[in-house]
Image (cartoon, rainbow, N blue to C red):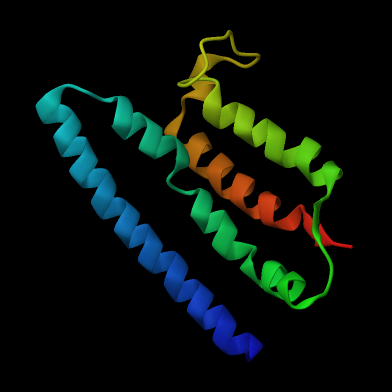
Length: 130
């Protein structure tokens, strides 16, 4: 596939996904306000933007897909980016342990969205083939 066409398709997919997520977020927020059950809304918010990072790293994955061999995980990306990002996403809401960072930082909505995109992107970058 032509590189320019792939970039245009990637951009359209990212923006389409963001519009879709915004719509789902609005519906979940309304449901949470009506039922007073915020758990699903919070969990959705912690993981909704990870596919954006996957889409940004898609070109490398497609190049790897064409190669022969088995997929392997580069530990330097995993230890340096993926594991800390997963910590930021999981600890404040899913694991009942004390955080290493202030809760105002761990539960900030902007930081959460950025960490999700970084998690998805570096997860894709951490894949390689033998």
